[in-house]
Image 1: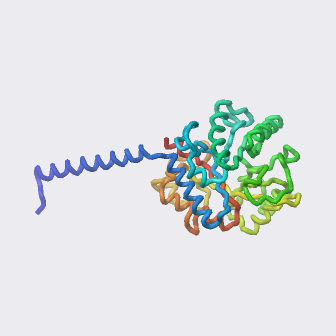
Image 2: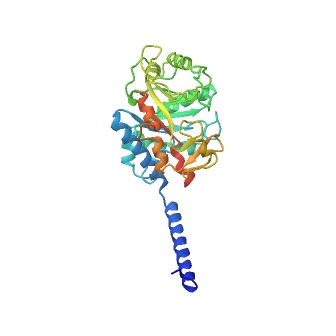
Length: 329
């Protein structure tokens, strides 16, 4: 028999109070989430999966260097599990570009970043620095200072990473070596936006006309099609007869609406893990990177982003937006 009156009122109040407690509990869980550790776990998962299929596959997170410290602080102990899962650290704007392209990064910022990069380097990882500068003297200074630190560097004269710089005429630390591992790399090219090239063969020829040890590029060409394993093999050929190490770029802290995985329905009804658009990069959206649905897009199945990279025969992956934890913190 349906209950009415005071009983129903008491029941309703009981239900409301419990619902509020559950809501507050969920909010507390979210507020107490360790966003740095969630990103570490994500990268570790990517590494374990990739290396189970390709043991020599290189894992290189870009930015978010604080993750190498167990506390995320400069004086924290090295996070051995995370450091063991990665093969290098990429860092932008170490000496140039932090506030504005072609402008020196504040010394305090450089010192702060280097405190973490040194933890990684001392653990045996390779440090790849991209400084954004176009004045020749600044480019020279960037190469010199990074070289003194024991870092491999690239002076990018376009923030869009859409070109092969014409300066220096002879690339920094140029050699004819056959590069079979990240540890052998002495220089690199960061070219993830191929829009200046009208076709794939032109892009491949442009890379082949250089002598870079390592090339960081996108899995996809302008038309959204993937580079094949045969094309990746061609990209390895240096002009002087040596061979290069080819790394694929992959953003894991933001979703990009121009990628194959983007669903039209998300434009009007976003999944729960999709956050707001990055005001600095149109079409890029922050994600709750610890969410299982997002992680399944990134790795672990035949249609995942990482599996496509592995199938194309790349030598490793360059993981971007690692510092997404800052957005949530």
